[in-house]
Length: 81
Image (cartoon, rainbow, N blue to C red):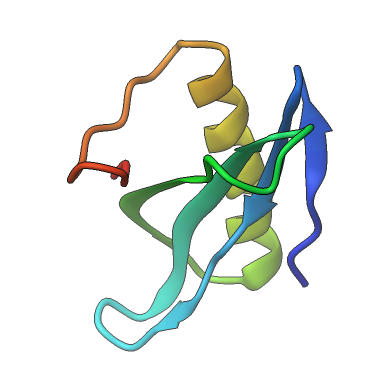
């Protein structure tokens, strides 16, 4: 179901997965500069959703907020959580 969108010069790609514990669809989005294949940021949060459709919508909103600078995910080098 993952469908990428372009937003302010970035490609946002939902990467949600069905989790067993806690049961639900994960919140993860990959953010890549639209004009490149490299430089992908993997951003995720601990939220889960009951449906894949809801998770994808929240992934895209999460990505938009990151691009807009409204939230600043942290993580290991080369990865954002």
